[in-house]
Length: 366
Image 1 (cartoon, rainbow, N blue to C red):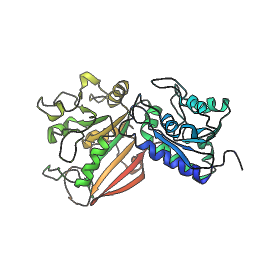
Image 2 (spheres, rainbow, N blue to C red):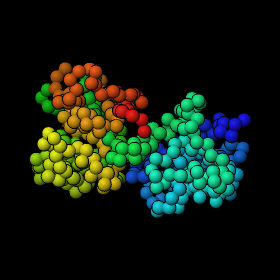
Image 3 (cartoon, rainbow, N blue to C red):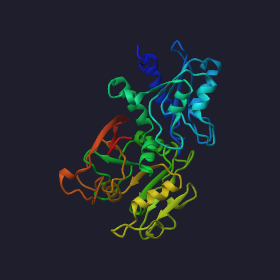
């Protein structure tokens, strides 16, 4: 049997590590989400862990703590390459070596240069390392495990690759793609179940963005709220794209429930069209340590982000309703013919009450 061949227990542990990683999605930013499962030589689980928050124990350390002496001689299955640098915590590669782990299975390599190198360090110490991406081309099970780990950590991986925050465009619409009726009424197109999921999505990002038109039309709060409508938990930064500074002083987005940045032409700079430079806004957010933008408001703003190649995924909540008139989800974009359309890949479909949530990947994979 090849040293790189995985057992059924190890494949199960890979998917479990990805599941564990997702537990940190609402608290780990700007760090990656990471999960780790420790297996005894016989294949049973002796420890699990995930990265909860910046400055807290990494997934490997949490799993090693749970396993204690049972980690010696075992296998560590990790969703992301163990880090190899000292930041607010020590290197996980060294922690695994010190614990006597004999085998490490890595689902995804770390693309961040300061932390990369864990695989090489482990091998130099005599630890057997299975670099799963190198097997993905020949093994469908390995490819599925890599895909799972990449998808769970897509926000951080894409942010590292692009050097800008990951952008999720969220939209609630009718079957015929309308976001409001002809008379501009737009509240509660989607169900309470969908709206609750939107707040769960907001809790997983560090930035929410709308255009000034949305502020003028809807006066949104742009906060994470509970089922009673009260702000709860960590609140994302609110960003309003407002070229000429039209946001009213009394707008809810300027209250003290969460921080807000009015990105005007003066504060963010302008593009060739004289409007706020969207790439510059993302660059500034990156400089501020922001890694995930939820683009919520405005058909024109969404079209501008898509045309600029700045949307990474679309999350669409589709209600079982038809209007036949009213504003569409996108408006004013540059696409003039079908061959220029923005391509998307459906990666998830989930039902929320009477609605469906569709998640699409835009552009290259993480």
